[in-house]
Image 1: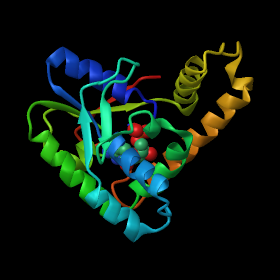
Image 2: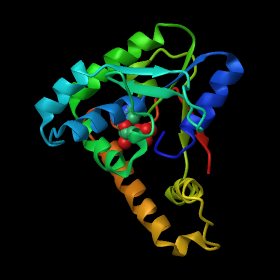
Image 3: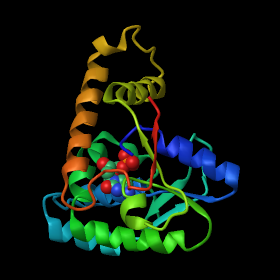
Image 4: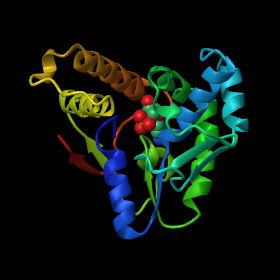
Length: 207
Ligand code: DC
């Protein structure tokens, strides 16, 4: 499902309940984006970004710091867990994840990870592309307004602020709403693996 539909919350709880591995594939697209930004590789340079996705060593491990993280992500050995949530990553990750070569490389790694055992794998194309033979496919969705509200509350809480009584009037909420709507549009219209539910997925509206 799309951003802020509840994938990582539900996925992590489900994995915990079942005693399965939990793996959020979004971190891989984010790690490639962050590494490109950090190394000064232009996001528009498809070949260079694709090569980076083939060579960057992305590892996801149990949390190493007790700061609210669900896991620790390393990119070439460096802890990038929180860097992956930076606004500049949010802004550039959609074009990166639209490059066919990047998807080919990361999907290959995701299938290898899925072979390690029982797993709850979270992402936008898991049921449709990565693991078409999955035993259970869940597609989470929600209205843009509700998903934007969740991200808004996360941002406000992280900054230790009070949420506006009428959050829809808050410019922070409005910019989150716009950014989400734009990301939905790019993710669902891209040519390679656009965001859509698998035919055999169970749809869950988390609004
Ligand atoms: O779930 P997320 O916000 O961390 O995902 C970040 C970006 O990565 C999102 O804009 C789309 C892309 N993505 C993808 O294309 N396929 C996936 N399986 C997971 C994420």
